[in-house]
Length: 218
Image 1: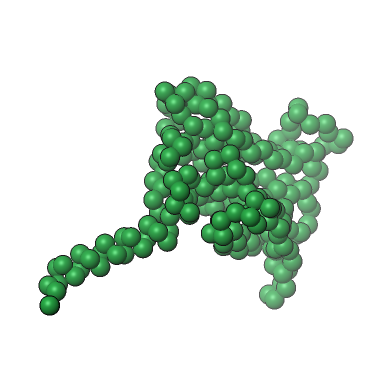
Image 2: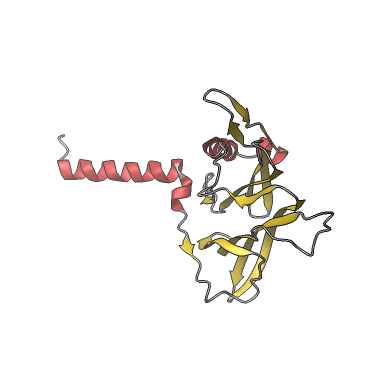
């Protein structure tokens, strides 16, 4: 029997949509920019907001906020000389009845650094996915920290949370010393990634390699 063209096209489009949903789960997550003038009760944070988003999954109404302090001299730390400090934070909240309940917090810093400091999230690396299609979002945080006065690599981390389960990759980014000479780039992943769904580790490796090269002056 000859199938008419409109029916064939419709079936083809439905197939493409199905494959997109099953292969690229992250496309199902719709992020909205958080309205900072209407924060739910209970949201507290330190630093200056770099990213603030909201979305809904099977856990409920989610908010994630990423902040950086920038370089300054903090009373939190002891200082031997004229060293400076820099901190970064990431927060995950679940909203219930317009009240925020903190699920986790990420905190890292460089303190008392007399030379150049980098303590910042990797540009355009923040993502929210549902790679294993279980309805619980994976939240991907990637950042770098260093205190150096040369062209050495930065310490770099990917921290991913699914609910309260933490996954981590730790290592260094890569610096280009000459046209064909590079230094750094090594990493290690934790047991959670090693024992978790394979799509998590595959995604983490791609994210790492996409952002592995140090961009000076970023």
